[in-house]
Image (cartoon, rainbow, N blue to C red; front, top):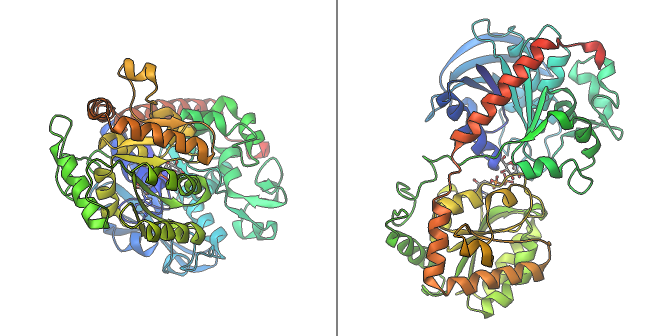
Length: 494
Ligand code: ADP
Ligand code: GLC
């Protein structure tokens, strides 16, 4: 099975969120499951300068406003997975993030930048760019890659099947309808049955309408996005594809996130040798200027600071918990108002609250290892990876019961504790009171070291490796390939 992943970011080369972790870990997991998997990536500096042993595959020529576009094939460092790089310096060689400039403003030519990515993937799938390797399945991730599915439909001779994964429905890639001609697609693609969405042009819709199979990153989020509450206006489209939508939980890259081998943390530890965890907490408290208090429950956050993540709830619940003796450590970057509020919280209680604004992968490991509990109180969460890292490090996740958080954390209610199934804490409504009550419950259990330890061991015993997810994707790919064989593409169906 030859599988081509299309993604805008990949760990460790460039990462703005969990999408990069998935793009970095899923292709090698598929390789281990017997697939021949490759990626196609935009030639952003962090990618074009890091992919090893690059060779020219073909000159594409002028495209999407760029005078020179070519396709190169090399290997990702670390995993050694083959990766195609769409080399278009005019569109990709610049600072900032993959999606925005350094002031946080969306690049004005994102339609061209990600249109080209999808176009290149679709033409690879058609066997036109690299005659030596044609995928059986193209797996496109999020709106940045979604146009792949439209271009494959516009190219009916393509035999490859397409799978589209929604990592976050809230980011849709919407553009002014007047930009449509730049995509070079037949006019019928700009219709309500195709890319048109409330007088806008939607890249996300290209994936939802044209992919053979749609997945998202947890079974609960797969159900949620078919509802008005979580559907971001696309729930009708998703319901119309219900037979083709499923959820596959993300895994954890066991080589990157492993407390027994992690060189970023103060001391290594594992389930049957937990002393190192205490040393990690002590070192983290010292590093952060928090009171050296082993008896204080230390709650951590490693997150984008956006309304999705529900961190305003943490701000509101924080004073009560600090009075109760808890400590908080917030690592993140995002909305300026949240950044300022967490800084102010630190100023008010410097030995109980620490705030680190910024993106720092190594610090994230120390936070996950050194805290007692990791907070993910999201308003919505397609999968969430930090709670999975928390489980693996015995840092009990405290989460809101939505999306992938609901699928991965078992609340320490009386029954689950009695049955030794509990792995963390969860609450339902997105209110400060509900979060505070949950935090108080966790703090109370923390004061019973034996009970807490039992939960830690149960959490650390969870298996969220990529092996199972890769198997699920292999089954899905096989089904998509069979279905595609039985049903040739009909561009007239658009
Ligand atoms: P999302 O993709 O919605 O941001 P996930 O939980 O899937 O949420 O993934 C977030 C990833 O980004 C995790 O690997 C987490 O450790 C990392 N991360 C988030 N914020 C930071 C930060 N400030 N510094 C380092 N890593 C971060
Ligand atoms: C998105 C989601 C997050 C998920 C990640 C990887 O960024 O917000 O929940 O874990 O993608 O799939």
